[in-house]
Length: 135
Image (cartoon, rainbow, N blue to C red; front, side, top):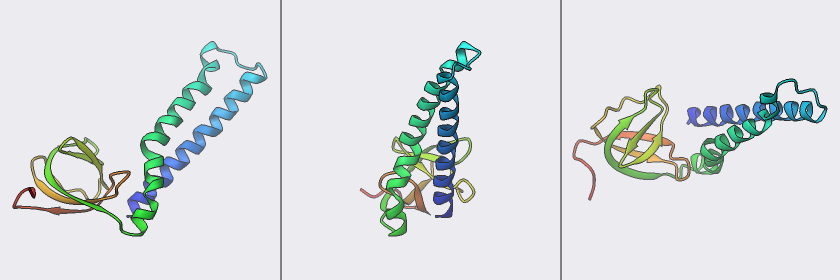
């Protein structure tokens, strides 16, 4: 659970820094201090990066704060299809689940039962299941 809040804080800080940079570059554009044509479009590029980060990572985790604190989770059992190179997410039945990479000891092809948050698909608990998926 600590990883959930650390990840939330990191994405929040990342967005705040990008917003500050966007404001600085926008002010430079208004004061006509932009020297290169490419830097004129930097606020728009930063806005797109901020929008992607908020839409993909920050907003779903913000919606799940109450679920994590209240221990409201969904349970699912399935076979792991793939694991990311950084081991911070894996795929079960075409759906991506995020996990703390330091405690993830799962392997591709193993059958596991997970407890995850409803909005951000952050895995709270992983249990290896020998029997296979429930039907």
